[in-house]
Image (cartoon, rainbow, N blue to C red; front, side, top):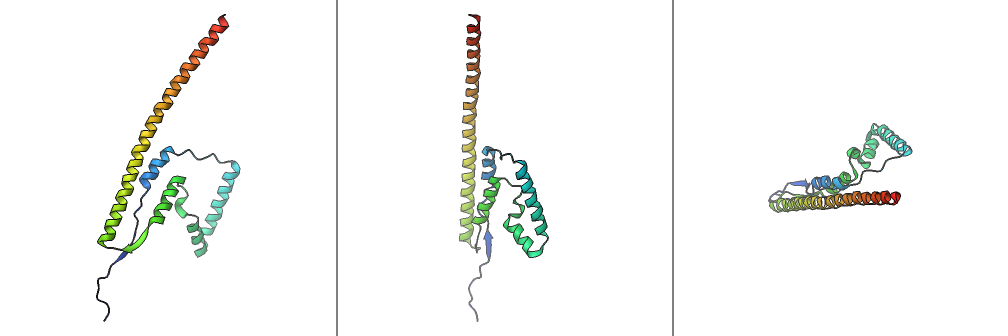
Length: 155
């Protein structure tokens, strides 16, 4: 007979969910640069070529997979988060130890994401205040300059 030990099932663990972090990072990301007409035309050509390849059996599917498939609508940060999440997946046995490891990693990622969210909000609040004070200063400065110009014109 064969070995009579316990048989452990295995699975792929998806432990690093960076969606919360990505959402918070997007708030401070600069807007994407405006595309020139040539860049827009080039992107349209790429889409058309990719659409043609999709229907061509296995090779079309491979091309779609290489190009990211459904990443088209994702921003740069969301693509980064998805890439990191995919890279962090691992396959192992389903044991109590593995479950504890996964739960701990998920908890730490969530805690860091929450920390990042509160820190980013605090920094945004601080610099919004700085920006408002600068706007008030600029307005007062312009008023003083205008007063001086009026006074020098009257003389």
